[in-house]
Image 1: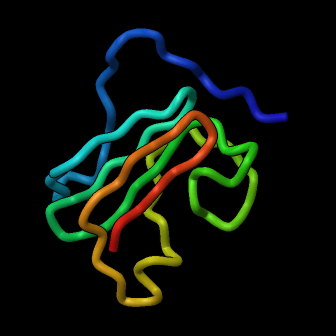
Image 2 (image 1 turned 90 degrees about the vertical axis):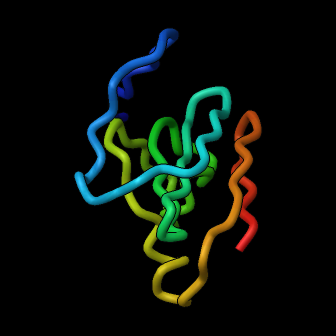
Length: 89
């Protein structure tokens, strides 16, 4: 199993430099951001697929949810629950 760092306090996050974040939501062990360009990035614990990458892999690095981009969907809002992520497109 991959080790995932759980941060109890705010920490700096490295995102690609051209991204501007408009919305952030935190679940119990995962985080999601919506960019001003309508893309969703997620990271953290992914055991239940809550990161939206089509698998149960956890990640300490923010990753774009490619399934939304491939479908041409513009993300407007994200809300993270304990083990879920709700996205309004």
